[in-house]
Amino acid sequence: MKELLKLEDVHITIKKGGIPIVKGVSLSVYSSKTTVIVGESGSGKTMLIKAVTGILNRNNFHLEGHAYFDGIDLFALNEKMRRHYCSRLALIMQSPMTSFDPSMKIGKQMAIGMNISRAEANKKAIQALHAVGLTSAEQLLKSYPHELSGGMLQRVMIAIALMGKAELIAADEPTTALDVVNQELVLAELNMLKNKGVGILLVTHDFFVARKIADTIAIMKDGELVERGEAESILCNPQHNYTKALLEASILRPKEAARC
Image 1 (tube, rainbow, N blue to C red):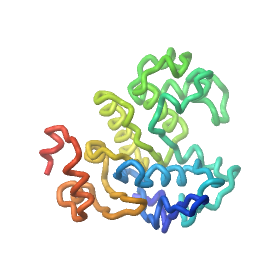
Image 2: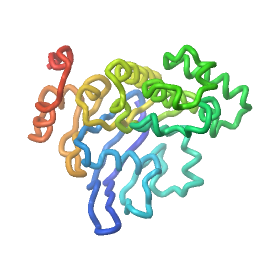
Image 3: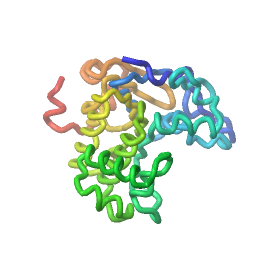
């Protein structure tokens, strides 16, 4: 088990007004493990994902701390240097319907950033789409994003991560916009990647998701981590009152609620 990502004392502040969004977050993500950050909307978890993946707008936000990936501080890299790590660090957004270019076919979007021929890229894309359970891969490559469901687009994102041989996946509420069936499918694909050695950092407000996929859970409130530990410990024996309140408020399916 290898430590893939190490966050140290991360602070994010809105420059205008000096409002703190993330306050001193430290945690690690390991290969073949999933770390899930659970918190309400506005707790700062999405901002943390944006900082790690380099899409935080530094013109509007002040970023402090460190994010070590393979020993390199991602926060210290310029845009050109950060591109070197793009294939190794993949991002899955929470809104698949708006994460693709609507004017470009899926096959072309899957080939972006791959320094190989289009034919070879299509071959790899078809293999990756089959791996995530999308059997009509050849037809999907010729489709535009609006012709696919949200669940299919989310799985296309996972397939892109497979094509790039991602070592770490950062997932921002990847099941929020999906129905129950597609939630299960996406979580199964993420678990498949974890079993292949990929490390996953996932943020969610949904304890059902955490129960399905987490090895470690960190609870985030008002920009701070208030509790963290092994998944079963947090889910079955929470210590912080906020964690207890979130669990009591969550809607769990019967077989999940019975695990403790």
